[in-house]
Length: 382
Image 1 (tube, rainbow, N blue to C red):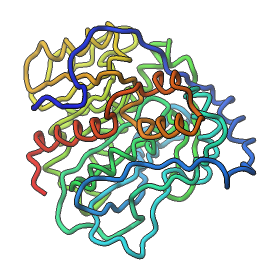
Image 2: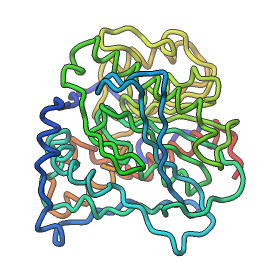
Image 3: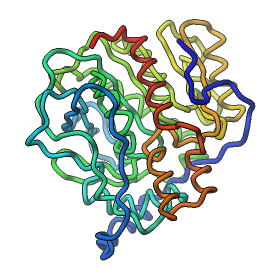
């Protein structure tokens, strides 16, 4: 694969910080007492970057129920998943642009994601419910089967925070399914409007048993979606399927290479071992399928080097790159939001650097890296 521009390279080891998770009690308290902001009309409306491809983007939501698995977080006898589908559309006139966050999700977001899960984000001054995507609800799909990508978000993050890259890929001819992991994500909105908030406890960061349960649940979620792709959208091409993800979602993507339907995966800064140091099979045995390992110089440590080097040592079509002057959430929509927040005086330069870093061209670099990797790996034909 050609070396990406905009600062991707190999660099030295630096420190890392941990994620913050809430208990179910704390999350419920936040979601139960969030009044609508009286200043919403004057609050900042953030903008997602427009896609650069030739196609309009349509979007729809889906739910899947696995009757053979119980839910480890709420005790339900079945495991229910929520997904958003982005796809190339023929026309969008007359169709409504989708919001990034549903109103109920936006209320949770401003009290939970902003200031708690992500303390760099402002707790006031932003109208999170007003953010519009560049995708149109239920717009007619471009005829034919399209290469298909699945996205798994980072730990505690909702699928909605991966909208920018998903829209970019869809505008270039891909079908993209962003997958939530309910109970672990801060807020999950199902197609019928139901809202489920985070239930996982903070011990997942330190308890190997809980951490393994979280990851095993993610792996099973992705296998179930992969097994039911043909039920989710008429544009999906089952012969050209890839998976990408951020942080815990990056590990989920890499492990998904074990599925016979997956042809390529991009791990955007996810460890490839359990909390107690056991390498995942892909790290122990390698892969003969294309795998991208993409990281930042602001969120790199010995664990990345050990687990990623284990995969690289096995040979095969595995590539590791690093984005300079960047931090862990550069792979998400925060890459677009942080500069706007800083310009509006709602985020300090230090907070921006801690969240996403200060790369020279973060959003276009990330979009191009992911798209060009899958263009090559899935033998794209538009």
